[in-house]
Image (cartoon, rainbow, N blue to C red; front, side, top):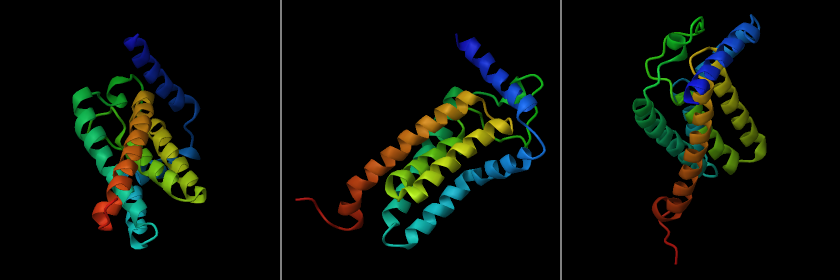
Length: 186
């Protein structure tokens, strides 16, 4: 069963390489994938949200979500699972960007993107939240397109990132009045 999943993962990447990659999409997906490098787009958005008092709590929650994703997905799971990158394991697969320094499972780009995006989606008006989720999904898909992650890396990371974003919201909502605003619940 597990071997069949691994083979399906590789077959999907080869199919993308042979049927989806093209001269128009490649620069677009390379740009999108690099937006997620080190969570940079999400860090910038979160810091911008900290500027206004109205969105400060959202910015804090998004930064917390990014930190949780870094710890859980990149710090713990990547090292426990130890999955090699697909371009090192799938015969004929060519990565479109440089070699990655860390392991494959789960996708750190996707995990951090969904962690931050779910915070924005749940906390901001939909005209901002929906594009955040779309960008997170595009970053996840871009990791498949450029050949640096397996589909299961991306799917799991979207799931874990979503859970970590929800956890960050819960933690922030529970602590904000007590610690940040100095109010106690009576």
